[in-house]
View 1 (cartoon, helix red, strand yellow):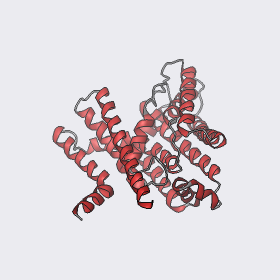
View 2 (tube, rainbow, N blue to C red):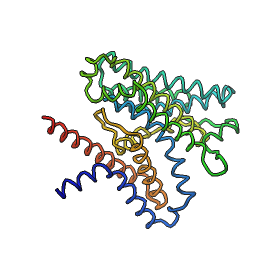
View 3 (cartoon, rainbow, N blue to C red):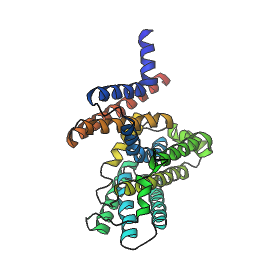
View 4 (cartoon, rainbow, N blue to C red):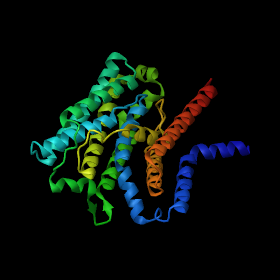
Length: 320
């Protein structure tokens, strides 16, 4: 009985417990970690991961995956930077064009997957390569700078001198994601498709249409995250979104989103995002190099996906 109780607690609150332990460890190791300014910095750093994570959550929920989101951000950053710095376009117009394009890219991913039955991983890896190549062609492999001063406020500004603008946008996107999953009919359809695609189709749900919608909404959130990143870095580089998709995937799977579909919770995703943010921030404060960070993040992703797979197997065995 005791083992069952501990197992239940670990399954329900495990991610939150890991988050608390992480904070305690870094607080003990770094005297500057437990500062208000540092926590503000963490929230600003994870805002892009959280926003893109909402989109990735919707896609994973349907049983898909989008590994092109890092390259979508790279493409959007370079294109937006080029339009503002080289073509003199108004920032609002340039940002609008980029968001429309990332939505269309998301829709194209969904259309390719549903029309050809191509595995989502293969389709989105191919799109990753295509977009990265286009970004290099637009920028000639160089960073693009020279944006209007007003554009910097989106990624670097504060409201009331305390709350970073990206954090406010992040909260808004998380609320929208929560609303989609809990208050809309297509949110319920996403759950149904990920839980049992055949049963969802037999119940009258247009499965392929919903999948395309999930990828399109993902493109919307990725576009927003990319623009914030561009404003924060104040430079459009073809290396901007490198490995970004793996940070997002690690965060959402840590947050309890099943890699096999059918299970997701925005509130848990927030904790997953914060774990990745605190981990990265703590390593920086402790002067841990980039390569060890990659090792640790890889291990975390492996453990998170492994735990999800084991949980799925147990559930399947219980049903059988």
